[in-house]
Structure formats: C-alpha cells, structure tokens
Length: 360
Image (cartoon, rainbow, N blue to C red):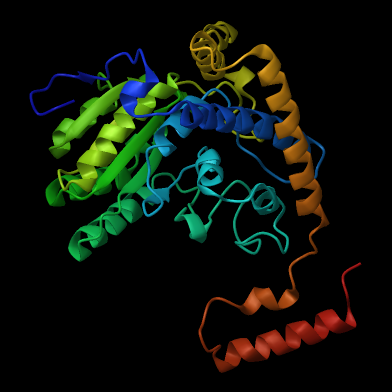
C-alpha cells in the first residue's frame, strides 16, 4: 500500500522473460521448490522415526520462499523465520549440512547449540534466528542501517509470518526502517494460521500490507502461491532498497498445508474443507503447469527430477547421520577469545570427568 492509501497489486505475469528470467533460471526455481517439498516429506519421516527431534515444513509455501529468495544478490543478508531453509540451499548451503543441523552433530555449523530447523550459514549471509517471534526483524533493520551508513549496497531480507505482525518487535523494526529509510525488505508469508490462531483473530486490518502505510513506506500484497508474481514483487522491492529509496513490506498470501511443526496437530483447529480448497492452489502444481505450457517441462522430466532429488536427499541424510558427535570441548568454545580462569577450570574438570566416564 502506498501513501495514497490504495493497494499496489502486482500485475499478472504472462511471460517470465519480461522479468529478466532465463529458461535455466526458471527451471532452477522449480527445482528448488520441488527439493523443498521432497525434503520436508523426508525430514518429517525422520522426525517420526525418532532420528531428529523436531521439524517444521514449508509445504504449500514454496513459491513464496523460492520466489522471494531468487532476486537476492550474494552480498545481501537473509534474516529468516521458520520456513525459509530453501533460501539457504539456493544460496549454496550444502544439503548434508542442512540435515546435520537437525541432528546437532559435528557437521552442524551451529555445533548443536540451536533448535532443529533453526538454520544459519555464514558463508551465504544466512543469519541464525530465534523461536521468539519477530526478534529477527530489528536485527535485519540494524544490518540494513549499518549498510546504509557504510555506503554498502547490501540489502536485508527480513522474513516473518502473519503471527509476527502482532509482536512488539514488528512495530519497532518497521518504525525504525520507515524513519531512517533503511534498505530492508520485510517479507511476510501470510499462511493464514499462527499455529492455531487464524488471521481473522490476528489483525483487524484489511491486510498485512496495509500496515506499512502507518510507518511511511510502501506495502504490497501479492499472490504468494504464484512464484513469478512473488519474484516480481520482491525484485522491485530489492531494487528500490538498493537504490536508497527505502523499505517495503510484502505480504505474500499463501497457505500452510501441513502442521505448524512436528509438534502440532492442525486437525484440532483447522477445517478440512479449508485445506482442500487451498490444495487446489498448490504452488508446485501451478508452476508445473506454467512450465509445461512454455514447453520447458514434462511429466517424464518431473519424474526424473524427483528421483534425482530423492537420491541426493538420501545421500545427504547418510552423510549427516554418519558424522561423529561433537567433541566435548566445544561446550566451552566461542564465548570468550581468552577463556576466564573460572571457565578454564570448569572445562578442565568436565573434560577429566568425561575421560573417566565416557558416554555409553
């Protein structure tokens, strides 16, 4: 929504080349959407088998995730929420490291210090996040403000869900971003449910995008299940931020087709007919139809891709599960450059104890 109070609707995309996307780039986006769906299915099975402790899927939201991640440059920074793991993979996070984060072993770059599905990968500017809702938003604005002060061209991409718009950090972040015109894009995946709280009980606003008006910048509402519309809206917002023209709040209207997480049972609060209606808008089905119409994809190619991706996921799981546990010494590292005497003494005692009493 602009300052005139009218919604800014993203126009329908008839041809991906008008967005500057080549056929190869388009197929890469589809591949990552398909990978995200398959990976979610496999990781949920691992959780049910007791091989990982927790997982949260992005099923139904792949167009919003991949479409928003695709326009970003390597020097841009991502401040994710729960369902943006595919963006890290798109940017180069190895699949086995992705899996290992949910295990917490020596292959996990976070050294087992985070909850599962709380990815971070410094090499691709993908920042660790917290389950405390919306805390990543002020972090993103801070990074964007620092980039502005330094004359750096980097843009911050701040992800959030519809539930995060009720958190105080949402107001703090958007207010600061609006006042200082920081190069940040707030990307809200409005998937209709904040765990068991429906959107109607989350806000009385006409839309989430409308909230941007109160902070003095543009809000855009887009079909979050159309990957090309998401790409177009995000590309414009990123280019605007990079040009020093301030932030944008994008509301991608989508749907969480699965549970909030592996600890949630959506059948207790969500009508079956609502899920069935949104399944007819499946972003993968829609994108496949577009690619087929463009004569870029076929059922045979899709079957081969699925087989190839499943093989890659299987190998990643095998590699991740084969990694040894973390060394006990890592319990005491990465806090102080020079450990203080009391911590050095605790480390000495603990390591001596573990040497005499090795884990079974």
